[in-house]
Length: 110
Image 1 (tube, rainbow, N blue to C red):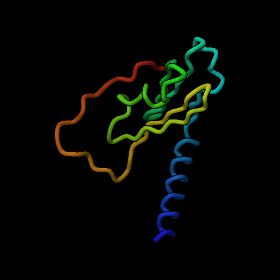
Image 2 (spheres, rainbow, N blue to C red):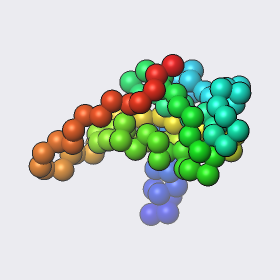
Image 3 (cartoon, rainbow, N blue to C red):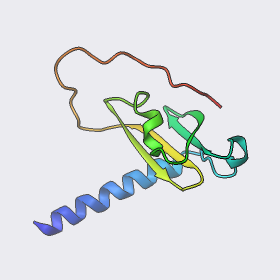
Image 4 (cartoon, rainbow, N blue to C red):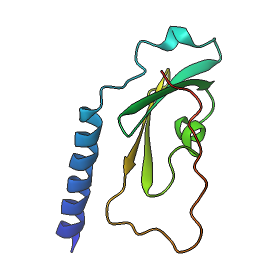
């Protein structure tokens, strides 16, 4: 049973790394675009790049929670001086019954 869990974990890591490596978006080198107490925060969703400056003490995903809703999954990498976030379609997750959430436009585009 433990081998199954290990195998599934490795497969998930490979899938996540594959999706991230395909994207060209990164906030590295954009630190000078934000004022002192803020850091650049990049999001890639449906191959569209988004950018905004967020407080350094705020989690990377907090700014993009409303942009990345089911059936999408938000994954962020906190690099301390910048954030790279990705919103990708989840596979195998069925939406819950009920009204769909309102579509919300992401705030800032490159």
